[in-house]
Amino acid sequence: DIGELGRDRGLAVYVVGGFVRDLLLHQPNFDVDLVVEGDGIAFAEAMAKAFHGRAKSHPKFKTAVVVLSDGKRIDVATARLEYYEYPAALPTVELSSIKMDLYRRDFTINALAVHLNPERFGELADFFGAQRDIKDRVVRVLHSLSFVEDPTRILRAIRFSERYGFRIGAQTERLIKNALQHNFFHKLSGARLFHEISLILGEENPLSCLRRMQQYKLLSAIHPLLALDTAKETLLTATDNVIKWYRLLYMEQAPRIWLVFFLGLCSGLDDEQFATIANRLGFTKKMLAELGSLRHAVRKTAHRLYNWEYLKLPVSELYFLLNGLSLEGLLYLMARNPKESIQKHISLYLTKLCDTQIEITGEDLQIMGVEPGPRYGRILRAVTAAAVDGVAVSRERQLE
Ligand code: CTP
Image 1 (cartoon, rainbow, N blue to C red):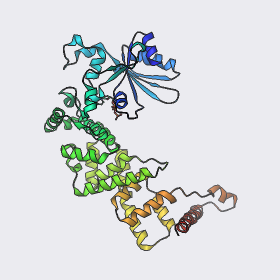
Image 2 (cartoon, helix red, strand yellow):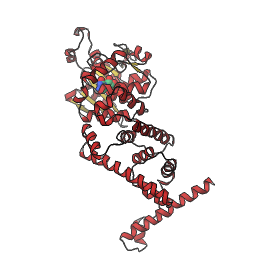
Image 3 (cartoon, rainbow, N blue to C red):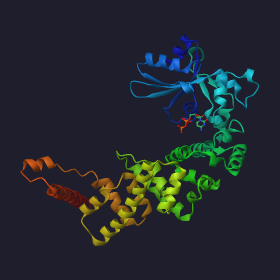
Image 4 (cartoon, protein in one colour):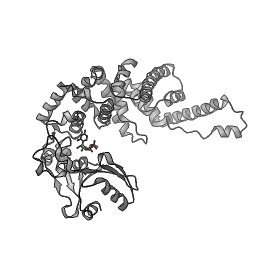
């Protein structure tokens, strides 16, 4: 095992960070991060050999990823003696390299390590009161420069505190406010900001994170156009309800939940304003184009959907109407159109109609001697329509 491998090579090996935090909180976590006191890359290579995996190393950072044969990934980092030169360090001689490695991290709750070597297996290394903070349910930074070093940690503090129902410690909260007053966010690259925002929007409870961000005036610090107003809050609440509803369906297809919420967060923005936000968040041209056209498609589909309802068109027309929109687009469409009948139509599509299959293909038509050309499309569409309307009829019968 990993610990024996460490012992045989004379190295101390620890599992650290989120895995240990979640272990103490009885939460599932399958992201294993190891820290080795010594050469992490050589250790990762030895691990790869012992477990028939591959090691990908990043010599610049002295880290490696071991990819096991079942695809699982284990991150391996090196706790180096150079860490003793850390500027905010305490009297350096006292510090072991694992302690220094943990001290570089964001919050006490993330600064725990467990020994893996057989002679000390399972022993907890807790230098900064992490167990106490987990017990007291509080997110605390390890030192006062934490947010100066990395302002994304402000978003992480909110993410963890909402995820676990922890409060943010008083001093940590002061440091957050101070960091915001000094506009540390301006220094952050769009890509890093966006990464953190998408993590927040992918949490179990993004809405409460957003409210918290609003309280700290963090949304407007990122960009004034992102600030919550009543309309946006209503829409985000509706988004939250739609996502909760969709989760309960246990459908096979998993939407990118962050994207549904992101669309909600950008509701009310025109194209130019949306481009401004995209620019602040470092979107690539491709991503801006993709999200921009998704926003358009949602708007267009909404119009058509109201028309479809008004004109009492057949269900197959509903199918063709919604078939062109991604799952995220559909869920957002539901959220932004709270009219009950509209939600019912989308729900019918998602739960019954969307996986309508027809047996016939273009190839069959060819074998039947149908001249190739635009007729193919028309025929297949007609068959699909018949199949969809069939599904709808049988559903109505079931309901009767
Ligand atoms: N870390 C940090 N500062 C950051 C990001 C990460 O100090 N801006 C540290 C944290 O101590 C964290 C570790 O790096 O425990 C690994 O980061 P990550 O995988 O993002 O954190 P997890 O705690 O595993 O979070 P999650 O449960 O969301 O995966």
